[in-house]
Structures are given as C-alpha cells and as structure tokens.
Amino acid sequence: MLLVLIGVPIVVIGFALRFNALLVVTVAGLATGLAAGLNLVDIISAFGKAVADNRYMGLIWLTLPVIALLERNGLKERARHLISRVHAATAGRVLMLYFVARQITAALGLTSLGGHAQMVRPLIAPMAEAAATNRHGELVESIRQQIRAHAAAVDNIAVFFGEDIFIAIQSILLIKGFLEQNGIIVAPLQVSVWAIPTAVAALLIHGARLALFDRRLKRDVAISRPGGGQ
Image (tube, rainbow, N blue to C red; front, side, top):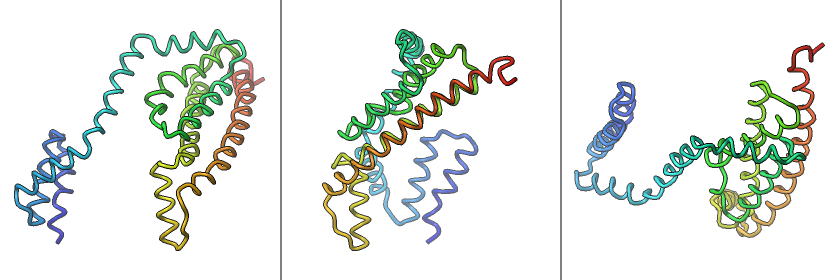
C-alpha cells in the first residue's frame, strides 16, 4: 500500500535537485498511477480531467504581469501624487475607506476586486504612505513597514468578515455542512443574515483600531526624528 506514495519522494527529490517542475510532477503522477494499478490510458485521462477542471485558475496569474507593467510605468507614483493632494487624508482614513469598499464588494460576492497583489501593494499601501508623509513629513522605513502591514490586515479582515454575507460563497456552505454534521440544521440564508452583525462589529472595531493607529503614527514619527526621543 505504501508504494502508492512513491510520488511524494519523487517530487521532493526532483525539486531538491532543481529539475523542471512540470517534468517532476508528471513523472510523480505517472509513477503514482502505475503503483495504484491504473493503466496508462486512465492516468492520462486523469491528467486531462485535472487540466480541464482547473483551466480557469491560470487566468489569475495573467493579472500579475499586468500589475508589474503598471508599477514599472508609474502606478505607485500616480497613486501617491493623487492622495497627496487630499489634505484631509491620513493613513488611517485611507485604509478605512478601503476597508469599507472591500467589505461591501465582498458582501456582494466580488471578492476578486481586491487583494494583496492586485490592490494593496500597488495602490492602497502607497496611498496610505503618501497620506502619512503629507501629514507628518518623511517616514523612516520601520514606520513604512507598519503602514504596509496595516494595509494588508485591512484587506484580510474586510474580506474575511464581508464574504460570509454573500449567500453563494464557499464559506457559507462549509459552515452549513459543519453544523449539519453536528445535528444543527440551518438554511444558507440564515447563516448569511447572521453574518451581518459580525461584519458590522468588525467594521467598528477595526475603524477604532485605525483611528488609534493614526494617533500612534504621529507620536512614532516624532520619536523617529533626530532628538525626538529626548
């Protein structure tokens, strides 16, 4: 029975020796199928089915070179310039605005409209940094990293608590299935409705955290300057 696990050491050794990843995975799949008693036709059919079932997953990777080209041609700089013209903007307010937008779109099932690669890194984090620079002056690297961390957290928290409001999301089905396994029968709509108070609580709590972050940011910038800790 352990012979069917032969694909695991093949993958480990192949990757360790830096062989072509596609070749390593293909050989591991063939070896596993043969060890399980499948004939060659069945193994190739399984490969084809896996490719057909996941053919749309590759579309996600097409966005990455597009974002890279936009960044190379000044996307971050334009974002910083835009937010620097808004004098009322602070890092916390920028992040809170994104939190609200991200949570609303997630509640409508549009979870792909945001994300770390698509929005946070090229747009939201630079805009928050620009707002902080515009208000407090030049920032040291440690403070920039804090702002970027908060920008990533905003995206995670907003989509985590917002997506459960959308009735056709996978997490709703997961919750429903878990409850049914434990003898609790609920409709997906019930889970969706009861996710609304949780999302509102997350909005209020994280809004307070971002307001406190703005106050702490002012203090930290002052301390980071020469003579600021005296």
